[in-house]
Amino acid sequence: MKMEKDKSRHRKSLLRSVTVGLRTPIMILLVLFGMVPMLVGTQVVISSARQNQIDSRMSEVQTHCRMLSARMTRARYLAADVTDASLDREIETVADVYNGRIVIVNSGYRIVKDTFHISENRFLVAEEILRCFQGENSSRYHADKNYFAQTFPIYNNAESQDIDGVLLITASTEGILSVFERVGDKVLLLEVLALLLLIVCAALAARVMVNPFWHFQKKLDQVAAGALDTDLTADIYQETRNISRSVEKTIGQLREVDQSRQEFVSNVSHELKTPITSIRVLADSLMSMEEAPVDLYREFMEDISVEIDRESKIIDDLLTLVKMDKSEAILNITQVNVNLLVEQTLKRLRPLADKRHVELIYESIREVTADIDEMKISLAVSNIVENATKYNVEGGWVRVTVDADHKFFYVKVADSGIGIPEEEQGRIFERFYRVDKARSRETGGTGLGLSITRNVVLMHRGAIKLSSQEGEGSVFTLRIPLNYIAQEGERR
Ligand code: ADP
Image (cartoon, rainbow, N blue to C red):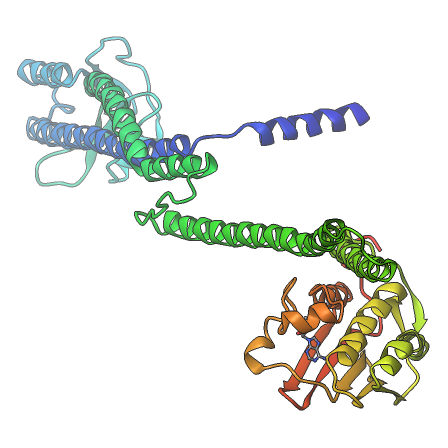
């Protein structure tokens, strides 16, 4: 049982691994469409012509025999004591002409004449004979034995309707059939020639039909070899046009990805270089001074330390982003009290807010517990609140509100800060994008905070919304589902 299953699986996988070119099925279909009607047509024509021949032979025989029986009636063939030699000859002739046998049966069912001379004086009580005596002529074709039989009455005299005897003729149709057999042989030869011609034509047609795909494949090979600018237009068929459009779209997207990757790499290099350049400048100027005072040394070393912190923060943020970008980024989902999480985050940021004289207000509209990755959501909230504090005004405020409905929880961070110009609002989530580079640098920003936040939110299948007025302040709202639903095949 198991072996049979294995065998059938093996067969199926073998079938799956066999790839057939499009030309083969097209060719087979064309040959079939050409050949089947031709074969059926010739068969129908031949058999109907054969039937016609047989029918006309039967009607010819009928005419002859009817005349013969009429003559026999007139000559009173059966009543006469002496046989009519001329009639006998005619009977023989008719039988010979049609390659058949004529038997004359009298009213006593005795055979009085047999052109084969083998059954004379014997009795013949066949169904056709009986029926003919009752006035019913019969004409039957026996296709299986290739002959037909017809009966004709012989009357007592020309005026009466009394039947004295019956003329039975049986004639072979083999002559006709053999003619058609010969015709059939010739037709078969023609059919074979037509089949060969059809195969050649179908092969050519299939080639022409498949050609656009072949050309398209060549262009795709060029693209695969690196020629991304290759013109992929293939408008001959709707299918090739659709495929070429999809491929062009995919290539366009890949180009964009490639471009943004290059941009990212150049941004990363630039961002990493900035603190190093500062460190170098500081170190060089220290070295160029001959007898620098210790205080100056300390001051410069402090600046160098700040730049090192900055460099390490950029690297940390980059690593966080890269980890989250990986498709198999892991979320450590647990049930978390969101109010507590936000409170603790704010507690950590309070010293920064105090330093900038910004009031941090926390408002909890309802108690919320949700299935989330605690560390990551805390990082996302922290980034937004930190921004609200950093890009604020002296003596400003930041209000953090936690709310929920039956599906989502919301963390709203509103500030009385500098706001974000409308045209910049769509871009601030991009990596390294900063509205005011100098201010961001001064506050120790890396330009990666909002990208990280957005990634965290998206990983939780949530959304982030921003509304801001330049000079008045901004409101960032995070909307996260209360229950995390992992997608199929996803690891947590
Ligand atoms: P950064 O490390 O520079 O803060 P982010 O990605 O966190 O980087 O923010 C990107 C930019 O968005 C910031 O440089 C800043 O210009 C702007 N921004 C973010 N949050 C606010 C806010 N609450 N008010 C005003 N501008 C903001």
